Amino acid sequence: MKLSSTEPIKEEKLRRTVKQVLECDVTKFDPLTFASLPPADCLLMCYSLVATCKDLSTYRAALRNFSSLLKPGGHLLMVTTMKCSHFVVGQHKFPCLFLEKEVLEEAVKEAGYDILQFEMSPTCHANNLIEHEGISYLLAAKG
Ligand SMILES: C[S@@+](CC[C@H](N)C(=O)[O-])C[C@H]1O[C@@H](n2cnc3c(N)ncnc32)[C@H](O)[C@@H]1O
Image: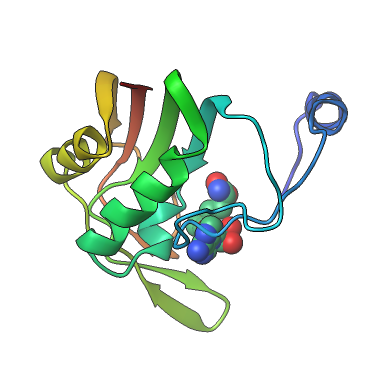
């Protein structure tokens, strides 16, 4: 992979900004088992829940568990591969939760959020390691 000339600067900035790395298990009612943090202003979830949850009820529960880390009025920013059936890592093929826009929005609302913005990009990852139809960007506020 070729890095752009701004990558070292971005990496340095990120390393300065990140203060702590914590273990998190979204399948647990209390996802940060070994730590206690004040409620966050913002949560960022990228490509994780569809890869982690085997069905919709697990997905809904994980979203609720994860959201317990956010303060009321705080923001959730979620990036999701849409209509994804599987992804490949090395020799292994993993199933992915197949999500459509309406189902995703319903799950987010059910977890106690007001959706502020939802955008779909038809852009797909340019390789055959993942089968999907676009990427969604969702911004929501916790009620
Ligand atoms: C497809 S990767 C996305 C990684 C990263 N967020 C990114 O954007 O590149 C899915 C991630 O979900 C994490 N994961 C799997 N099970 C999890 C769980 N129960 N709780 C929290 N994260 C989990 C994996 O460790 C992995 O990093």
